[in-house]
Image 1: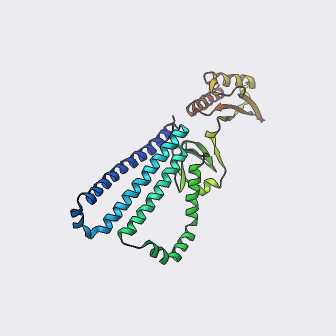
Image 2: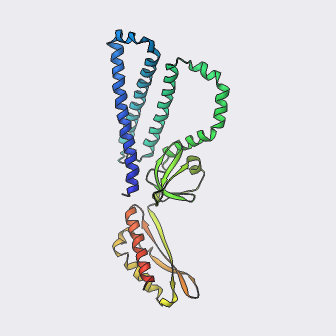
Image 3: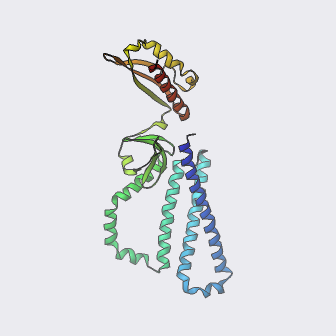
Length: 295
């Protein structure tokens, strides 16, 4: 597996482990507060001056635990029903996690309103005009989030896919509510807004089981080599990779003849499931071409 894929999977795995740790801490805190309410009512009355804050915390923890537990049940049901092995890079699970985060954020806002004893109905009524203005200003941001959800729940793009968006080419490392993060072959991270992804032509090389490789080079006429001889040499360099190459797709052709040189085009189709073999094939062909040019 490509080390970039490993880095992306490790990152998501760490995030999932951190999420479980926070869940455990919140569950423990919730149980402590529940015990305070049931068994230590006298102690709870002593700190009654902080009643609103305690109620807000209790509301947040209970609602958060219910949502998180619902997420776990939904994901487990989905995995069992579809017999999914790669749970880290599955789009549905990624989308469920993002929705859970949004709901938990909403619960936090409600809890803060309760802590400060602010009536939600009166608050939103009083700022309705301001809220409308904010919604108008942030419509692109909201659209970006909606498009992010569309990407997460579709099977067009998945974590680890090798894609090309416009002039950017790389492997998908993460899909968020704001952008798609890809890593190029030069290990550069590029963040592309979801609106751009859905409104731009996207080439997903990973969804195609075959990939055409093309190598263009020129050969001096002074070398006096026959085209068939060059093709045979390049074919021989690929003998150990034939099981990864589609039969009858290896060919060399002359694309242009100049005064002192000829332009050649060597192409073949490989099965793209194995990215490491694809890279080895590219390297072997390049070495063979360089060796032929130096003869």
